[in-house]
Length: 116
View 1 (spheres, helix red, strand yellow):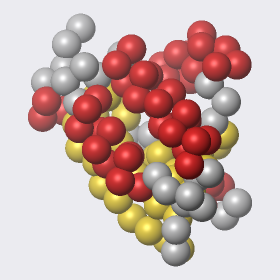
View 2 (tube, one colour):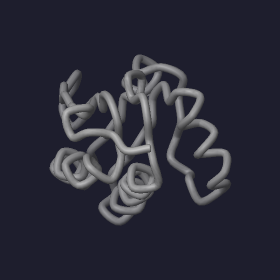
View 3 (cartoon, helix red, strand yellow):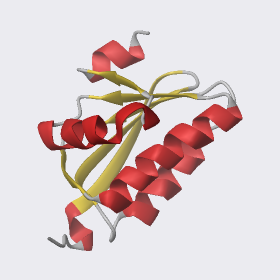
């Protein structure tokens, strides 16, 4: 299954200093993964909290999963924190398949992540 480039958008908000909520919408796949990384990379720095709001992420393939794993690794190297908020059923299944290799904090809602 291939998704078109116009099926991905990202929006950024900052509810508190050094806290970022990046909402990923549509499809995170081979077509959009590099574009998503541009947003993510800009928000990862020492001491930052990045909440990836996955509420409206409809589809993720292995390229999207690679970006999420890269996010986790980059955050750990920089001393930043990453939370995954409200992943859908399909994405939760991918996380379950990856086992302990995906250790980022997963929360049921964005509000839970920004009130840590």
